[in-house]
Image 1 (cartoon, rainbow, N blue to C red):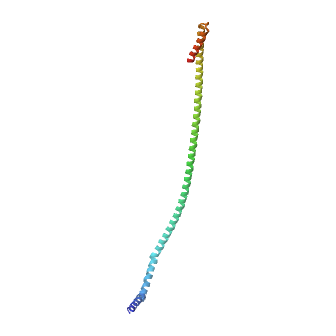
Image 2: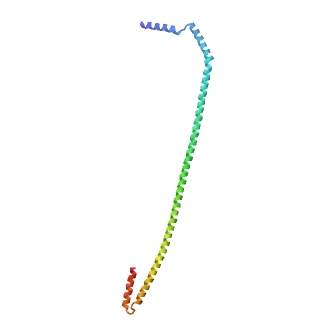
Image 3: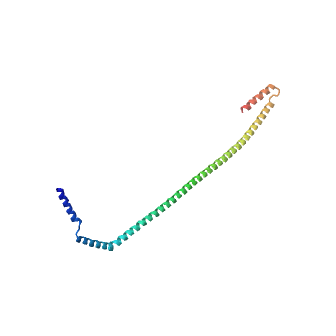
Length: 178
């Protein structure tokens, strides 16, 4: 039984709130129409203009973003080209530096070889001159010794043969010692 009372109360409340009075409906229509008129007169155009401006600014921003992407892509391509050119120049400079270093080393070796040959040639000439001078001195000494030996032989007694042989052997020993 209490359930029936509850359902009756619920049905009464629903009927009261769900079906509005005719005056309320008329006033509601008048206020809604007035509200619509005021919105269309004063707010609708500015709202449409603001939406149009917002739509245009979004479109401009998208276009600007696309242009920025294109510029970035162009800059990246230019940057890549510049990096490649710089790398090629670096490689070229390194190659040229190595070639110049090799040329300098070759020139230095050649110059050192020429200098060494000149020094060897000068040394050979000096040695030849000194050898000639030594041979000349040796010839002079031999000639002097020969004259001394001859003088001693002639001055010694010519009759004694053993004495002459002994004298010659002594002089030869003296020559060997000098």
